[in-house]
Image: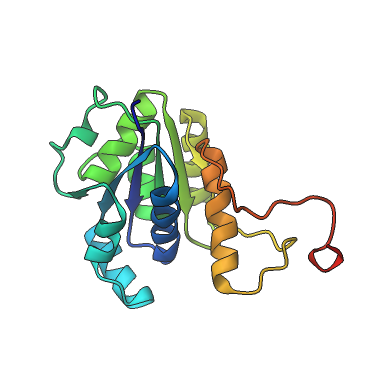
Length: 194
């Protein structure tokens, strides 16, 4: 049986933990094959925020590609994947994707995902948004992308930062059709009433 292929792009925006946790959860999912593109800025941010080197991310993925490798198989629509998630997605990457600027493998793979009508989820990490950001998001939504900034819900009464991160990542997993079995879901009751 063919595995479900998911592309994960990690850019230099703050929030590298979102990409790392996504890779961790996808690694545990049955029948999933991950393809990682970690930008140079993403490497630096991961080190600054988490103390993790690029190797830690690469070890979580089945395949890893340098962002400069625009001739990699992910750059072609003939290589079938089910979805791509950019987590976190910098404003720079979001803007490049919206305008078809495919000068690195993250933006090229995202462009391929859109042109092939596959699911593209962008965990845009910035705040506040100015009008240009919002217009770019509208343009991407009109092109078929899903804009999913990591905005957590607090109905699950998170105890740790990781609980908050997981709530956002679990929503993204729902969006790509791979729901996490351990996701905390709203059931109409408070956590302390259970």
